Length: 534
Image 1 (cartoon, rainbow, N blue to C red):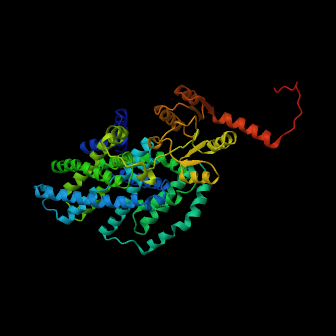
Image 2 (tube, one colour; image 1 turned 90 degrees about the horizontal axis):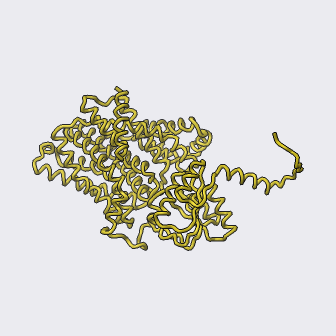
Image 3 (cartoon, rainbow, N blue to C red; image 1 turned 45 degrees about the vertical axis):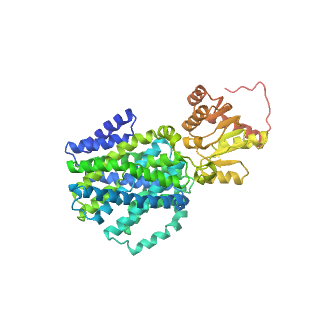
């Protein structure tokens, strides 16, 4: 049976990819198709699906700054949306009940509130997948959406604890001591190296130290994985650890989407209610837009964040299943939620793919905030009078900055992805700001490059340098560009794309090493003209 699941997932995922849809849409459809043929989920598939979600939350934690959650626009925005969305869905369901929808006829108001609460959540799994596929996890709207989803996960933990009557063990208080183990976790991460032990250590942290420990004391396991990831977020190898787990996490999440499709046993009444829920979904997205925009975010940020969150959550299935077991909701409502979640993913996927196009076509009739009133997270970027722009302030970018500053003076602006690294550069006297040049959002926020005469594409990611070059060309940049690359074919591609100069980092590193040795050591050699090396 598992082999059939793999075949179906591969075929449908491949078809979805070929018609420019995310593969997860194909995985969902594969689950529906298998269910229609009489197949059902099994323990192995559910276990793998749970592991995938746990590793996903651990990976989110590795990239999450705790200060993000403390921002008013995150915790208050998530709370306001949860309250207003729950109220909207509750009143909508009451209205449907009064209209004579049979499925809702015998459901009490308290249970309808629970139903509305389940529908107010958005899918963490879907949103993160969509952001990763577009490479926009670090965009302002991506950070905002992830922060809201993490707050929703916290709400979920509180609800599940209260509704089941399962009080965490007294030993749960010991979890507050976890930060004390942070130096040990850091040291072990240093010792783990860069190979299979790094992957194994990540799995241990997510599934044992995080999920396992939290489950042991009566807490939600997924929350444990998220918190363990957040504890490691400040380590220099956090990004490498996340990347090492990426492929394993992606494979396991295939099981998650397959499982959703296999869990729905469509009935006429369940399908009818699911269609109604899908028709109500735009109101949920509109509430996201209004609330986010009220915190003075740009229209573009508000719109793209809302599209990322424009879906129902797998959490709804958990709530529905729990309510069904307790006799609060009929079985058809669980079917309706399962179908609505799946359809919302299928609708949301292309909307996210075309999010930038949707914004371009709607920006003219959406009211924008003035530049002075914009949220600090979404301020416009002013390069000032800088004439040299360095994208990527790693070792190569930093070295180039110092050399060019010595030769040309203070006419340089560096762009660094991580805010902490940007601050470190600033402390060293460099003119560096935080920004992600691989994110279209960065190029939407930058005011002007009219004074810039030279751009150095010094990011370690070749695709990132290519994208930045495309954005410069799109904005009719008239100056010169130089880029780094690791391979000769990449250099050829950059030159064909229009870069003025491209350099092989390994070749240049060798030349730089030799030059540095000569300058620092000043070795004295005997010169023999007739010396020949065989």
